[in-house]
Image (cartoon, rainbow, N blue to C red; front, side, top):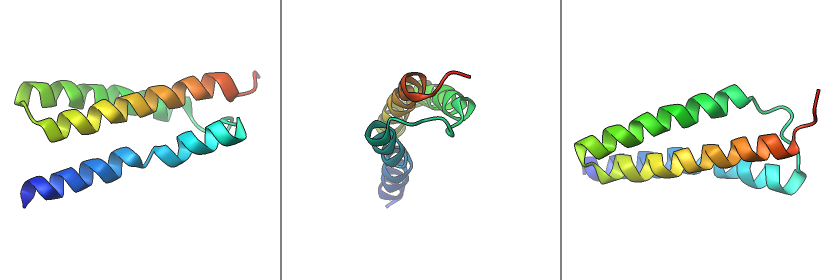
Length: 85
């Protein structure tokens, strides 16, 4: 049961970035999205990924591998679609 709860938390938390990725791709706008949020979150998920590897916990590894990837995608979209000041 605890693994199911952890898996559901991982899936929901990780997938929460998909709507922003799809919206950014569709509208080609990322001006109002903070790069600091994405950068800090990507750094945090990278540390969680390493932690999961040390613990050999595949739920933590999977969630944070995708979380890191999604945040890197958002950072790339931010770079591509934000207007220069």
